[in-house]
Image (cartoon, rainbow, N blue to C red; front, side, top):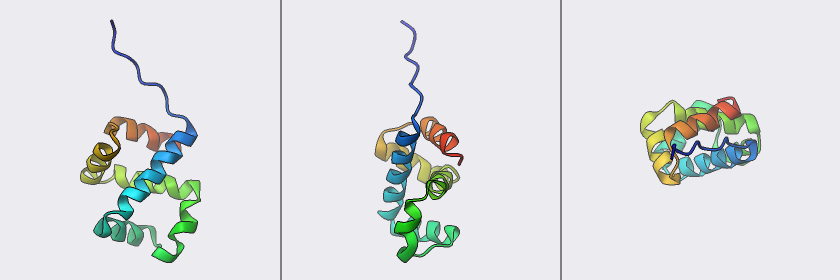
Length: 93
């Protein structure tokens, strides 16, 4: 029996993963601090930014650019890094 091909990710599922990525970063004070500095945001405007699909794409792009964070997040949500890269492509990261 050939290996199962993973189904493609829907846009809403990709956005959910991006929100999970933001929550993951928020649970890591040093990492969220670096992310906010790179994004040019403060904690006060983070909630508003999180509603923007372009911002969510940036969250995923940030994780994809940091292998250590990417692997930790992938393990946390039990998703392969390759699948996260697919999420990034779908969101335009």
